[in-house]
Image (cartoon, rainbow, N blue to C red; front, side):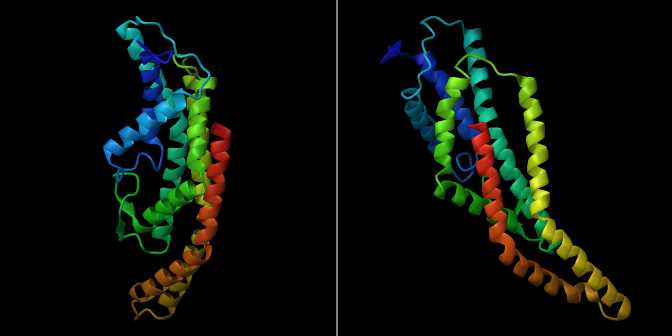
Amino acid sequence: MTINGISLIGLFLVFARTASWVMILPGFSGAQVPMQIRLYLAFSLTVAVVFIIDTPLDFGTQVQPHILLKLIGIEMLIGGVLAIPIRFLFMALSFLGELVTQLIGLNPIPGTPIGDTQPSTVLSSTLNITALTMMFASGMHMHFVFGMANSFEAFPPGVGIDIALFTEDIVGNLNSFFSTAIRLSAPFFIYAVIMNLVAGLINKLTPSIPVYFVSAPFIIGGGLFFLIYIGDDILFLFHVELVKLVNRIY
């Protein structure tokens, strides 16, 4: 059966790739987004994409079930390949937030998970929601949609991908992402070392005073002031990394 010359099997394969992409991509796959909204979004993106791609989607009228399952698996894998690196980049941002939280002494304070269900800290949630807001406000999400449409030119439906090359690329991305997180949190490492060194020296000079409890408010207050001062630079540099990643993938 066909609709406007497009087979239903081809349409469903486009939906399989788009749905797996929506399930993983940050901002679209958030736990705060109802499942029905994500389903309707995948349907609408499928309809939008299928009429702008030039790749033929005619798979005939008879496709064996095992062949169809293989095609669905390939399409879901390709959709995941397009979204997983961006997901990992936002995970690196969450790691940065948890790292900075511990360095400035705010680690006991839990936060609301943004885009995930695992426990998170206040700073990680704040950084993630701000980065997602910047992503949508700058129109970056439209690059994702156009990239999804262009992926059907690079990877036509039913054509597999090189798993070894994908795995190697993921390893390289993880190394780059978390190196970026460590680099962006470097000022807080320096701050934590200096503050703890000062607290240790004061404790040696005045052993009768519980310096640990006295210094905690100053360390937290100084860390928050430091975060306010350079937090916008951290988010700007993260957005630059996101733009570079999107341009490289899409």
